[in-house]
Image 1: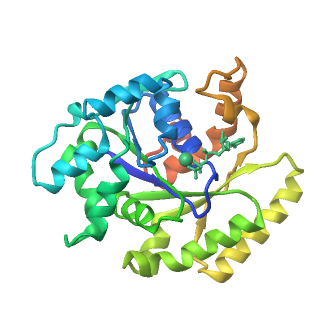
Image 2: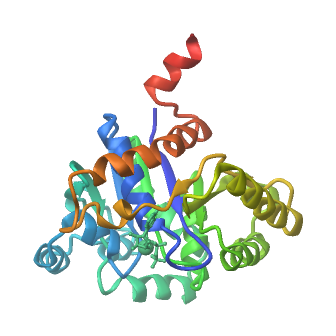
Length: 290
Ligand SMILES: Nc1ncnc2c1ncn2[C@@H]1O[C@H](COP(=O)(O)OP(=O)(O)OP(=O)(O)O)[C@@H](O)[C@H]1O
Ligand SMILES: [Mg+2]
């Protein structure tokens, strides 16, 4: 079975893209899958969480083990070997592979985007194909930047099979997500239905309110987004709660109970996610057989 590529992008910043990429990568890897993280954010936050060592990041960048080199070579029609670019680090407590961004990445992407080349929206897809990521991994997760810079969301949309769009349960995030979804199909040059089938919205950082209160609020937010954009917009039924443990895992601040806390808070979403992309976990498959 070939690997599935998952993009994570959002309208505003700080919705949890990097955290979700890290935690999903961790849980999938821990379940025995081969996982590749792709850090398409020049601020290197995911790479930093995974490598936890600035000197290593410098070293990889100096040795050209970084994404801008791949984009450059693919642009020139040269071959690329996955093993020359992938670096290894740790997602929480398991080894994971990652492709890291470097200081040249934004200028390379800008020049591809604004240059004379055709089919610019496919540039990330071509890079992933040239590297053969689907042949080498079960799951490829792309973490990117907010919709402030449209091209990253568009590249991610074209480069992925499915995309997770996290948002916080606030009226600002709901409003900005609506705005992004209303612009995205035309900007990406894709039919609305195709875009809306490809993405699923995920509420993150939901406070510990009573279940009834959240059900009510969630219903309202969903109604607003579906009313403004389309009844076909899909949402994860489960959400990710606000837990301080998420901000400490994979950092020096991590505490013993954090890993369990993050796991417990994310497993329901993981199961739903795997069903959605048609790759249910062994446990879910066994349960479905009963
Ligand atoms: N469920 C959660 N509970 C508590 N804190 C969280 C949760 N999810 C993310 N965070 C924290 O919120 C902050 C923003 O998260 P993160 O960096 O993952 O967002 P982002 O969307 O990647 O941001 P950016 O747009 O800047 O790339 C981080 O400090 C992160 O640790
Ligand atoms: Mg981020």
